[in-house]
Length: 113
Length: 114
Image (tube, each protein chain N blue to C red):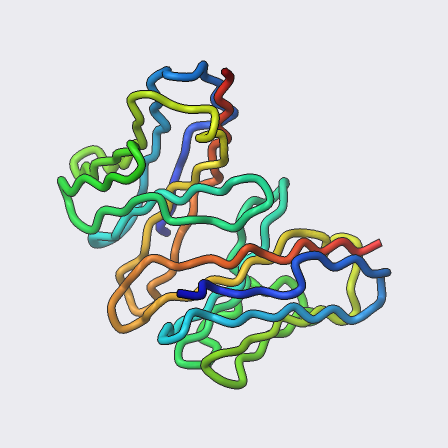
């Protein structure tokens, strides 16, 4: 079945460091891909999305490119801030009649000043 | 624009009591999803509705759990009787079905069963 695999956390970085959070997926067809972010005590917020191969989603300095050949959608940011500390979820949207979101397990990011 | 609205934000009750969680989706969205989040199991999809009709409830853990969507602007998730292992954060999300779009999440209800 469809699935999403994320790197284990927590990821701890110093402010202004480069961030990569790996995400790979298994799916039939051509799913849409998403990154969601969850700040403490809040719900999930959509961070960025990509709907087809080679699309690059970007928002708030974060980027991720839909790589069909490697079935990956890695999240990157060139310079993290303390305020980026949160849990990040990679997800795919099944493009069958269900349109169900399949989530990865989440990666906690901690950015130290 | 108002987002997905959930109530209550926090609920603390004793085991055996009935618990009702409420959700108002974004206006115009015709799909609604209920999730449960725990440290041990992460995010789990419990049930989802399209046009107020339950489509897949395979994630509902037991018969103690039930969900309804009487109209396009309101849904409930009920647990009766509640047990301590039901303690979790419950999220509601909504999206449009006719054009696949990302789901928009509410802030969740933190449920503690003593």
